[in-house]
Every structure is written in C-alpha cells, then in structure tokens.
Length: 320
Image (cartoon, rainbow, N blue to C red):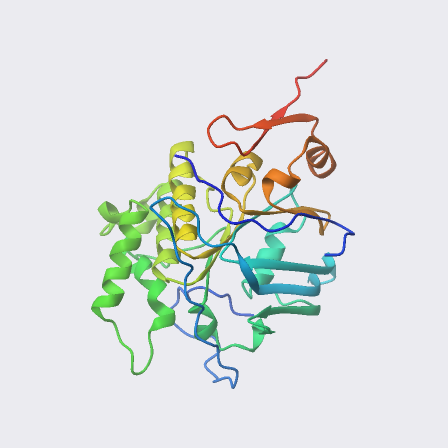
C-alpha cells in the first residue's frame, strides 16, 4: 500500500532565489482543425528503473512550466506573476486551502485556461502553439469533473482516450485496443466495460475517467483531485497506480486535498496560498508544523509516518 518517494529536488520557500484542453475530446471532434507550424520533439525516453518498486532516476529539467503567468477568470485574478517548474519524471503534488489557485494552475498547464500575461511552455515552446492532438499525445488530463455523452458505455468512453492517436492515415489498431484493455484492468473497471456510464456510482465513474486518461498513454499526466468520490481503499489503490506510473517514468502532476496523502506520494510538493507558491520541494524538507499553520491555518504536529517515514500531519487537540 505504500508509495516510496523517488528522486527529489531542492526545497524552495517563496521569495527565495531559486483554449482546448490537453486530453481527449469526448465529442470526437477536433475544435481546432487548423494545422500548426509548431512541431513537438519526440517525447523524452523514460527513465531507467530498478527492481519492481524501485525509484526512477532523479527528476530532470522541466518540460512543463509557467513563467510570470497571470491566471484569471474574466476580471477575477486568481494568481499574478506565477512561475512554476514541473520537474520531469517527478510525482508533483499541488496542495493548499480551497480557492488558493491550485486547480487554476493545473488548468493552465492543461490548456484549459490561457494566461492573460506571462507564458505556459512545453519543451520551451508556448503551450497554446501546439496543435491540439499533438499536445494531447504528450500531456494527458484527468479533470476535476466531466460529463459523459448520453448512452455511452464504459469501454467506448475509455476508448476516447486514444483520440489523439487517431488521424486520417492512422485508424484504430490492436495497439489501441490493448491500451484500452490495460487501462480498464489497471483501474478495475474491465468488468463494467458494457455498462452505460450513466448507470455507475460516482466512484465507479471516477475510475472510468481515470482509465480514459491512462489509455491516452502520455509521458505527462495531470490529475485534478483524482480521488474525488472514491472510498479510502480505492483512493489508495488509484494513488498507488499513479505512483507505479511515476516509477516507470511518467511525470505525474496532481492536485490533492488530503495533505498526508500528498506527503506520502509526492516527490515534489508545491504548497500554495492566495495564488502564490509559499514553498516547494521534497515533502520531507518542507512539510513542517510551521508551514501547515501558515498555509492552512491549522495548529498541528508533524511526525514520521510509521509506514513510509514521510511527514504525517496530526492536528492538535482542541483545548476548548
């Protein structure tokens, strides 16, 4: 049940030196069919791995980053001058109180939200400059909430994850079929393949959406609150699955509400408050009682998790 931290990057405190979504198009249509002159370099080779459960190589230079980004909805500014690097091959988790900007940051990394100033870049090129399918072959997204088309089955919805790999001269193949089957087995929805998505529970639907994201088979995977609607057993199973993907070389970026889960699974933690990065780095270096009180306003003690050795936050008992 444990997820062992892999490579780490240096911790940083704030102030220290230091369009179309990427993901599948559930409608099956490309909202931006125009070709783009920007071409994407081949995805970097996955890091070598040790024995099963072993750590991947230390994270490399970031492929995905924001630089001086202003993130806003209409005139409501959520973050100003936000610069974040996502270490390649890391399991990066973004945490913070409600409405601090963590999901907004993820939306900008997924092309769901375009900065009104500054840039979001993939491989040092503006993210918005890539053709949708080209970007979606590199960056996958499990959004916070999704709506399935009426009458669609589980197998057909998961198959939509292969949308970026289809084209005029590239139709459905056994490779696509195998990717869909692997994704459904990994998320334990294979037994639901012929069921209509509308018939499923919230937790089952969440696992189906996770399967669709996995079927996309991208080297970078963005997860916006992936454990929503799941019971604790399925939360851990799904996070363990993402940890295995990370160990196999996938860069995973997740927004999580549960701080202890974030500290257990992350190799790189980003703590946000009021649209700003307060601290970032390995959980073992930045998760302290002082940080938790500063970011969440929670008095606590931090001890080693007896199972993993990662930071474990224990709220102080009320003195009332």
